[in-house]
Length: 445
Image (cartoon, rainbow, N blue to C red; front, side, top):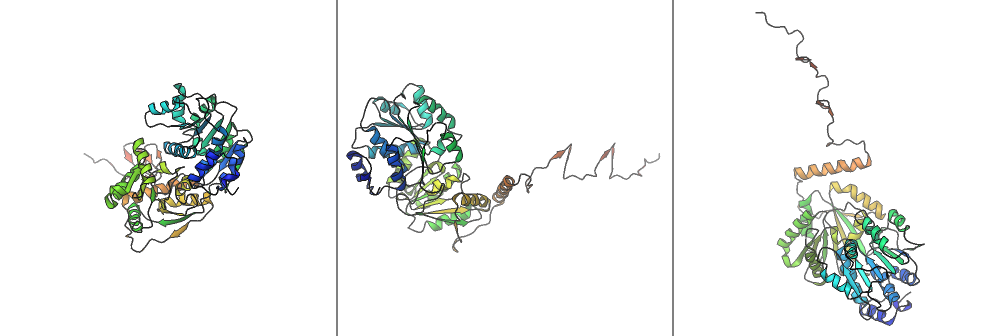
């Protein structure tokens, strides 16, 4: 399939594809679209930035064909609000020459407008699991007409934070339906769970699982502490090739601190910060601004923005902190090098991160190139508290590999009222201890 014209798509969809500038279908689109149009259940695994959203939306729009009735006939489940909005934007572009209707619902904001859009009549519903169940239980969503169930970022939807909601949704949608699962990674557990509700699915694995995109170069810098990381950031950003950069941090506090620092150095108009403590509307506005405003250079975020988000023209991804959920590394660096473009990822590694880096390299089956710190970078001494926390973390990592390992920070085990580091030969003998002289005699009167 060298052209979208080779698929059994109608003219309305082909016109929308042409407007978007899509010329050659990606590998996942070439393999998935004909199979979905054929009515098969599908498990689609492909690295980020390869067009998975269009791979399932185009055939679903073709199968639905035209607006009919009022309740949804296709349900797209997504794990995050940001991904809900992105899928909604893709639907808006791909369905603009059809009369098909859709609604996007997610938590974190009032449901009044979302309910109104459902009540107007829809053919496709894009929803986060929690908000879907809320609206269903309140009687706003009718499920009896659903013929297509699509799970975007399926692995995330089946982890412990969503799995109970997902099982409840399976109980309220019709049993006779077509199921589509798409993700950049797919664990054995997900495949096992999918076997409970999918009938002989066709697995489309475009590349070996959890492989990083070939369009993204990867390097690491070994750095001793946070302040040296910041010095390297400032040095790198003097290079004008860093036009559109996402900086990933492991916690909300670190993301806030780095974001505020960059606002002071580069100006508030060039920086956006998003994490779980930001309001939903603030996060949406920041993401849309970073996607559309050419002036914005930096997006500072946690893993909130690592999965499924399509932001064009991101030149660099910087892992300020190494992710401890190793699959997130693949999703993070997949924010760049999208749609046949090239990108670069840089990962800052402290001594406490070396264990996680080794696991990531095992996961992606790839050795990441190590670069030396530029001479102009001031390498600062690691503060005592930061060094101690790193040593504790290294101890925890070693215990994972060897439960019997006893590091520098293991707890002393009490023995009665004595700890093991007390002298064993110190015993109580009445009112006298063994270190007192045995020949001691009371003085005569």
